[in-house]
Length: 181
Image 1 (tube, rainbow, N blue to C red):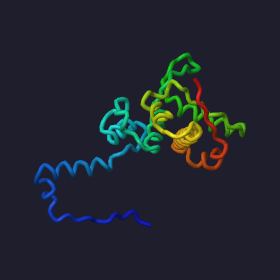
Image 2: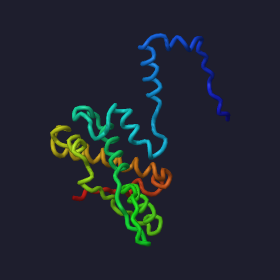
Image 3: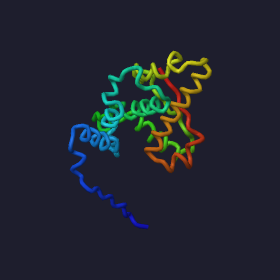
Image 4: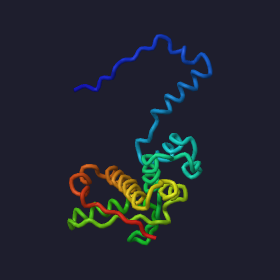
């Protein structure tokens, strides 16, 4: 199998740069294919998708469950905590990734799966609004089912990014999460 790419020949590449509209269109096309390949790029991805910072999103912007799931995942990825190490030093680390790694290691040692705990105070106001009954609509039972689906998918994606194979082989049916105040 080869990694050959199809060769695209453009007769005159300068024709795209003739007027301002073509340059703007070309820049939008280029921006469409920019996405983070590492953890450090999540903030840039959010600016690309929304055109503004996550913290300053217009409350009416996110309307789909997939977008809310993405925002919840970014919240999990971007939450930091200070941890005290054995040698009395303090270190900052990503809170939920550290917890997920701990769950994977605990399962590997003991075979038991601990609950994935999400602190209620880590969920920002806009995300709270997106998960509210007022925004989702329907009955409380329908809303709870949708919120469970959104959070479960975000937690699943977090574990998949850490270790896709281990998660699907051992944790997929056993994984539980809960919100704590």
